[in-house]
Image (tube, rainbow, N blue to C red; front, side):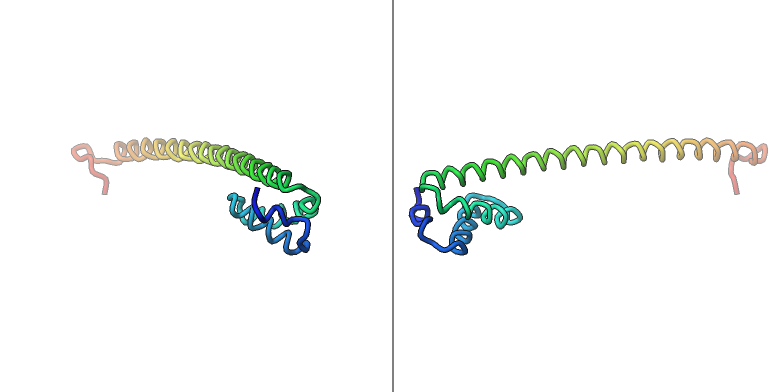
Length: 120
Protein backbone atom coordinates (compact mmCIF):
# COMPACT_ATOMS: atom_id res chain seq x y z
CA UNK A 1 0.00 0.00 0.00
CA UNK A 2 1.51 3.30 -1.05
CA UNK A 3 1.52 6.54 0.89
CA UNK A 4 -0.23 8.14 -2.08
CA UNK A 5 -3.21 5.80 -1.81
CA UNK A 6 -3.57 6.62 1.91
CA UNK A 7 -4.26 10.27 1.10
CA UNK A 8 -6.68 9.60 -1.76
CA UNK A 9 -9.82 10.75 0.06
CA UNK A 10 -8.38 14.14 1.12
CA UNK A 11 -7.14 15.52 -2.19
CA UNK A 12 -8.82 17.69 -4.81
CA UNK A 13 -10.34 16.00 -7.89
CA UNK A 14 -7.67 17.52 -10.16
CA UNK A 15 -4.86 16.34 -7.90
CA UNK A 16 -6.51 12.91 -7.62
CA UNK A 17 -6.60 12.59 -11.43
CA UNK A 18 -2.96 13.66 -11.67
CA UNK A 19 -1.97 11.10 -9.03
CA UNK A 20 -3.89 8.36 -10.82
CA UNK A 21 -2.23 9.32 -14.14
CA UNK A 22 1.17 9.06 -12.43
CA UNK A 23 0.28 5.68 -10.93
CA UNK A 24 -0.93 4.40 -14.31
CA UNK A 25 2.26 5.63 -15.96
CA UNK A 26 4.35 3.90 -13.30
CA UNK A 27 2.44 0.68 -13.98
CA UNK A 28 3.06 0.87 -17.73
CA UNK A 29 -0.30 2.06 -19.10
CA UNK A 30 0.18 3.87 -22.41
CA UNK A 31 -0.30 7.60 -22.84
CA UNK A 32 -3.32 7.13 -25.12
CA UNK A 33 -5.29 5.47 -22.31
CA UNK A 34 -4.04 7.30 -19.20
CA UNK A 35 -6.24 10.40 -19.42
CA UNK A 36 -9.47 8.51 -19.99
CA UNK A 37 -8.73 5.91 -17.32
CA UNK A 38 -7.65 8.51 -14.76
CA UNK A 39 -10.83 10.50 -15.39
CA UNK A 40 -12.98 7.44 -14.82
CA UNK A 41 -11.03 6.21 -11.80
CA UNK A 42 -10.96 9.64 -10.13
CA UNK A 43 -14.67 9.44 -9.34
CA UNK A 44 -14.19 6.07 -7.66
CA UNK A 45 -10.84 6.63 -5.96
CA UNK A 46 -12.16 8.98 -3.29
CA UNK A 47 -14.49 6.25 -2.00
CA UNK A 48 -11.96 3.40 -2.04
CA UNK A 49 -9.76 2.17 0.74
CA UNK A 50 -6.04 2.15 -0.06
CA UNK A 51 -6.17 -1.61 -0.62
CA UNK A 52 -9.19 -1.31 -2.91
CA UNK A 53 -7.48 1.52 -4.82
CA UNK A 54 -4.40 -0.64 -5.37
CA UNK A 55 -6.62 -3.53 -6.47
CA UNK A 56 -8.53 -1.25 -8.87
CA UNK A 57 -5.26 -0.07 -10.42
CA UNK A 58 -4.07 -3.66 -10.77
CA UNK A 59 -7.35 -4.55 -12.51
CA UNK A 60 -7.06 -1.59 -14.87
CA UNK A 61 -3.47 -2.51 -15.75
CA UNK A 62 -4.50 -6.11 -16.39
CA UNK A 63 -7.43 -5.02 -18.58
CA UNK A 64 -5.17 -2.61 -20.46
CA UNK A 65 -2.71 -5.44 -21.13
CA UNK A 66 -5.52 -7.66 -22.42
CA UNK A 67 -6.80 -4.85 -24.65
CA UNK A 68 -3.33 -4.23 -26.03
CA UNK A 69 -2.85 -7.98 -26.62
CA UNK A 70 -6.16 -8.23 -28.45
CA UNK A 71 -5.31 -5.20 -30.54
CA UNK A 72 -1.91 -6.69 -31.42
CA UNK A 73 -3.63 -9.96 -32.34
CA UNK A 74 -6.06 -8.07 -34.55
CA UNK A 75 -3.16 -6.18 -36.14
CA UNK A 76 -1.41 -9.49 -36.81
CA UNK A 77 -4.51 -10.88 -38.51
CA UNK A 78 -4.78 -7.73 -40.62
CA UNK A 79 -1.11 -7.99 -41.64
CA UNK A 80 -1.60 -11.66 -42.56
CA UNK A 81 -4.65 -10.76 -44.66
CA UNK A 82 -2.71 -8.02 -46.45
CA UNK A 83 0.26 -10.30 -47.12
CA UNK A 84 -2.06 -12.97 -48.52
CA UNK A 85 -3.53 -10.37 -50.87
CA UNK A 86 -0.03 -9.26 -51.88
CA UNK A 87 0.95 -12.88 -52.57
CA UNK A 88 -2.13 -13.27 -54.80
CA UNK A 89 -1.15 -10.17 -56.75
CA UNK A 90 2.42 -11.50 -57.15
CA UNK A 91 0.99 -14.75 -58.55
CA UNK A 92 -0.96 -12.71 -61.12
CA UNK A 93 2.19 -10.79 -62.10
CA UNK A 94 4.12 -14.07 -62.38
CA UNK A 95 1.43 -15.53 -64.63
CA UNK A 96 1.43 -12.39 -66.80
CA UNK A 97 5.24 -12.58 -67.12
CA UNK A 98 5.03 -16.24 -68.16
CA UNK A 99 2.45 -15.37 -70.84
CA UNK A 100 4.61 -12.48 -72.11
CA UNK A 101 7.69 -14.67 -72.11
CA UNK A 102 5.88 -17.31 -74.17
CA UNK A 103 4.62 -14.62 -76.57
CA UNK A 104 8.13 -13.15 -77.00
CA UNK A 105 9.56 -16.64 -77.63
CA UNK A 106 6.96 -17.30 -80.31
CA UNK A 107 7.58 -13.91 -81.93
CA UNK A 108 11.31 -14.62 -82.03
CA UNK A 109 10.82 -17.99 -83.65
CA UNK A 110 8.40 -16.60 -86.29
CA UNK A 111 10.40 -13.52 -87.27
CA UNK A 112 13.94 -14.90 -87.17
CA UNK A 113 15.64 -15.64 -90.50
CA UNK A 114 16.33 -19.30 -91.17
CA UNK A 115 20.00 -19.17 -90.21
CA UNK A 116 19.78 -16.74 -87.31
CA UNK A 117 17.90 -16.77 -83.98
CA UNK A 118 18.49 -13.06 -83.17
CA UNK A 119 15.71 -10.52 -83.25
CA UNK A 120 16.78 -6.98 -84.29
